[in-house]
Amino acid sequence: MIAGSRPSPVAALLRVTRNRPQPVAGERCEMCAEQVGAEHSHVVNLDSRALMCSCRACYLLFSDPEARLRYRAVPERYLRFDGLPLDERTWDELQIPVGLAFLFRNSLQERTIAFYPGPAGATESELPLDAWDTIVRANPELAVLRPDVEALLVRRSKGPDGSSCHLVPIDACYELVGRLRTLWRGFDGGREAHDAMDAFFAQVADRSRPAVLDGGRG
Image (cartoon, rainbow, N blue to C red; front, top):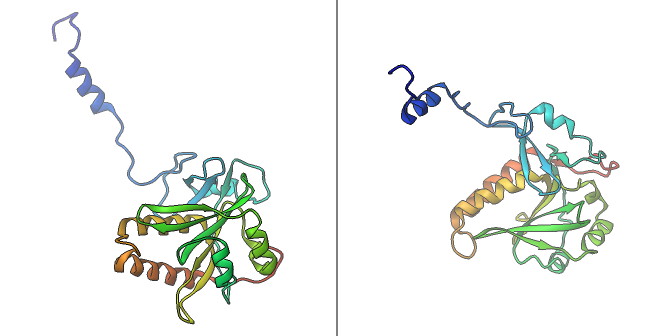
């Protein structure tokens, strides 16, 4: 380079590129940027309802369900309700047009919301304001459901063994929705989507323990 001359833009760009740190592979905590593994925890942003990947340390900061914080840790429990608490009449009153849905309580809106799958992804349905309270009065074991972070996952189908009802972490529901969206074909989802549902519910059943009336701990 001639003394006093300025480096060319190309040379400057190459120097910046060489000196730039290489990106770290894998997912990172969306709060502190710590690297996390493929299996990691989540917290919910209560304002946007978005899930955020988190390391264990950040997750524990928001694990108190009574704390009034913007974020809330998603619990890891799975419960099974023996005997479907939502009979056919109640299901019809909720105005959910399909046999698969998850319901959760939105604490900011103070109402229960249902999602059910379809070809465009999850469809949201706001339940009648008193619908959930009526259901809980008839089935007090459902009161263990924690707002914003846990959902009641219901699958209704014909036959004595085809229906099921579980309490699951809200991130598991979004995982199911994402999986079905990529596989859904036609009006009812198609064979691949139904196989994915069967596999998902088998995993849920393996993780679940019976729900009991224990003051909300489950």
